[in-house]
Length: 588
Ligand SMILES: Nc1ncnc2c1ncn2[C@@H]1O[C@H](COP(=O)(O)OP(=O)(O)OP(=O)(O)O)[C@@H](O)[C@H]1O
Image 1 (cartoon, rainbow, N blue to C red):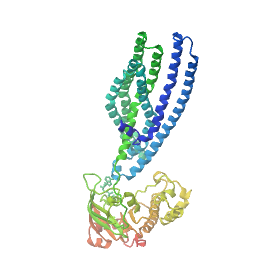
Image 2 (image 1 turned 135 degrees about the vertical axis):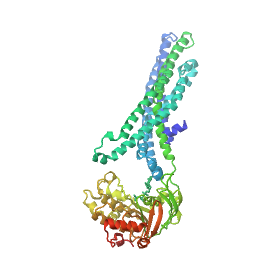
Image 3 (image 1 turned 60 degrees about the vertical axis):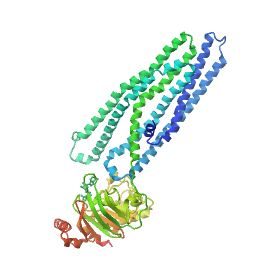
């Protein structure tokens, strides 16, 4: 039960304490006017049964007055409950969503990569919506729906235990049925949730791939997976409702048998002179009243359990351990790989026993064939992943001991695939350093050679960038990401060279922007085109996850190994002149 409450509130049960309190109070208050009504009936009956010579109008007025007052109390409690429930549930889920989004940021990238984006998005949006639904309409109803009949039962035991027992006679069978189907319910609920998440993933893929879909005139029939997901979701929904529905109807029928039993027992007791008619009337009134919330509670129980599964998914995500390390990042910022091995999957290594050093204030280039592990090496420096063997040392300290956030303060990254947020250009640059002034933002933009084109946009720095930066060209997006890195001003710079797909004008701008960034920093750069690295202090050549050679450009050419072969190949295909050295103008 504790776990259920913990899950249904996504690990925040305290938030629901107040709403539940008011909901129970409102439901209890709802019973009070009926008590007054029962009193009024008993007074009238006493007069007609000639137990009293005169009608006790004073008490009758008191009963009616009491009814009016209690109706006001009901109104007050209902209002309080309504506000507390909605505020409580929406506040809890807003807080929960923020916490989960923040927690995801701290999880190892490896864990996030194993999850589909649709699954995580589903957790943050849909699962929390289910929690809201449970918190606003199901949980308070459920608690008061169960609590009130039992309070009433114990109250009525004092008046007449036989009537009280008759009232709840069918209840044990109801409980047995509900308990019996709970495993089936969980199984069906789990496969329904899975179908929903799979559908969300397929749909996301379909929408992201819209460009290709349009370009190749693909129809929904080409996306069997999406079509199947729609059908599977439909089938699971029907199964969930269709299989469980009859069980719940039977459970409810057993419970409501109590009213009939109560009437039968009551009639016999009244005829036998063991029960007065007013007391009988009171039992029937209260009996009819208390089954309403209980019936609603039972009918909503499956939805409640289904919502609890959503809560459980959130709780499980929150329980995922975030990346280790609490120490400050060292002031020194040279980087050393000691026998580092790493694989994305258990069965194969992408980096195998790599030992290299990237000295402070130098430019290190990483080159090698496609798939040799260049980007992976960069990701390990930024601690997107931890190695499975060996150590990555930052300023002499094992990166696993350093707080990942502190480490990232020391590192700027310029990725090949730039992602711009759906925000203004100003804010997209400001992500580099949140407290940067407009002057600093502009200075960074000028250095990154993007100020001029920004000023030509309709709203300058306030121009909104589309989702993923789709309103800007590839080169413009790249330069904005460089401005971001310049603004961050971190001592270590990781660069994934991406100039190969740009036109010559954009490429020259990009090279200059990158050149400025390199100054005075420890720079590690993946180079796809070798002409950009001839001035590098050290060139690391990777092949199949191993360092096959390293040294300066001339040394490597003289060795006549893989680097020399790659150089020759690129020189022949591109027709370079050896003098082309874009970075040398700026690199010190
Ligand atoms: N997130 C990932 N999950 C699983 N495998 C991955 C992942 N990223 C890369 N790999 C695999 O790891 C290997 C090395 O990839 P990596 O991107 O590091 O190579 P690279 O040298 O940078 O390649 P390229 O020059 O083509 O960008 C490849 O076989 C690739 O398929």
